[in-house]
Amino acid sequence: MFNRLLIGAAALSLAATMAFGVQGAKFYIGDGDKEKVFMDMVNNKISTIGYVLSDPHERINDAYKTKWGTEYKEEKGVKVKHPDFDPTFKETLDNLGFFSITNDKVVGPLLMKEPALGGFSPFNLHIWKKMGEDKTYVGHVDPATMLDIVGVKDADVRAKFIASFIPLDKMVSEEIGSKVQTVDYKALPAKPMMTFEFPVDRAESLDAFISDFQGKFEEKFEANHYIIAGYKDIKGSMTDNNVEFGRFDAYWVYSLCHFRFSEGIFNNGRPDAGAFAPCSMYMYVEKGSNKLMVGMPRLENWIAVMGIKDPKMVDSIHNLDKEIIGIMTGLGGKEL
Image 1 (cartoon, rainbow, N blue to C red):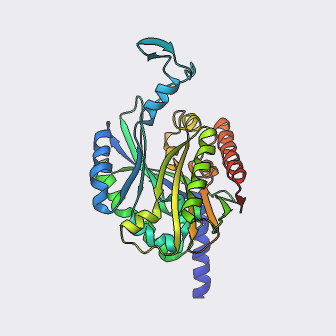
Image 2 (cartoon, rainbow, N blue to C red; image 1 turned 30 degrees about the vertical axis):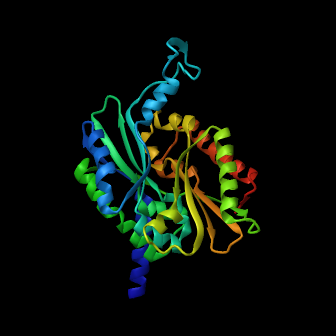
Image 3 (cartoon, rainbow, N blue to C red; image 1 turned 90 degrees about the vertical axis):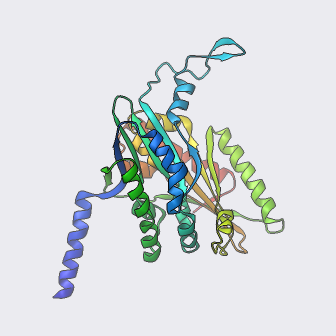
């Protein structure tokens, strides 16, 4: 009888989840312009709760305006037509910022068990404010959703990773505002991750292989109009923090951004989707291994989690996933 009750309760719980959805992202809302408060928080306060800020990108909206919304620029005192000016560009944001953060001491031991957690290590503490709206939003993708996307099932890893967000959310609530807006979703894509494997030639030094690979990787992505928006040497960070990381000979994470793609979504009505940006692509070589393992959450997760329905945005997301996979396989990677 008791077992039947448990099964019934589980079925009801699953039905409720499917009916009402899962929390995909959470934003704390502050009245007015909270930019100064936010900048003080990320630069001076989050370190007190264990978080490390890397590769901050503030006021991306200004860069959008400069690149596509500015008709003329000055060159050597002469006014010339800006080559990228787009007469259809419409400024919609007072603020848009990506601030990549990681709790290194918490995440290090978890990566030893679940390397794919690098798909959200670092993750974006996101700030945005719409023009004409006297509210500032600060938040991030829900940690349980991060874990679901990268495929982490280990109960201990999940519990510790999720718990590390409690002091962060408390601080954001106190600094920005306690009113909360969530984004809920029904299901993730069938394949939420893209993963690749590259051969490593141990005949040469690993450092030489990594240097050569990173040079080709960066050159190829930049040639396809991506920005290398961040780089974090996870292995080095763990060594500096005296965190045991012996499973890996090397582990690093790139942050990738396609500027025009991002403007087409964040500046066109969906600044909240910026919680997923920039995309974290992790790369690691296990101790003594002859394989470089690479993974990144597919941008298709944006459609599922953030409920993006605009056909133009959906097409651009699918196209970018295909392009990134094409670049990686073109570099010699085997898609897994």
